[in-house]
Amino acid sequence: MRASKQITPEPIGKRIGRLRVERGWTQQALSQRLAVSRVAISHMEMDLTIPSERTITLLAGIFKMNPHDLVEGTTYPQAKAEKLPLITCSYTSIERDLAVLENDLSWLNRLENTTGWVQYADQVKERWQWAFAEWINSDLEPQEREQVQQAQQRLQVVCNSRSNP
Image (cartoon, rainbow, N blue to C red; front, side, top):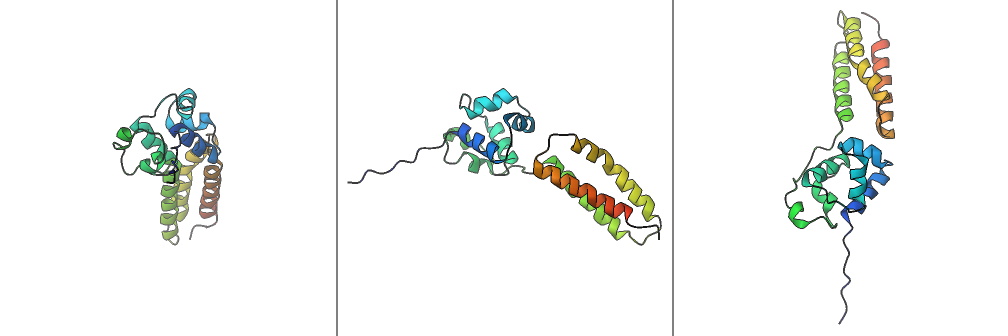
């Protein structure tokens, strides 16, 4: 008779810590994204506290996965896991805002040959300058920082490269 090999579940705190480290975040950076203290993150990662269903859902969104995938194969209590939603929002506010900027630039391109294009371009540029100033001074992931810089360059190119027809 062969002994079956039992798979030991990964502690939920260890999974959270591993996912955080894989993204290159400090506990402080994750705590800011989750709106909790750094100590709360530390306690979760050391399995001193079990994250609530709300916290797991938010963490899943931050890690861009669904809540059940985050807890599957971990020590997270089954009774709590059963209460988790199937999906969660998994985009950041910066990703959303950059999509809106892309929409604005697309709109501006469609107006390319209209009278008053320069004024429209100036309005779009003015509308987004505050966001870029705020983003540059915030704690962004390297990937987000690169996306913001590329979007800022694209805005400059679109708004500055044409003259009034």
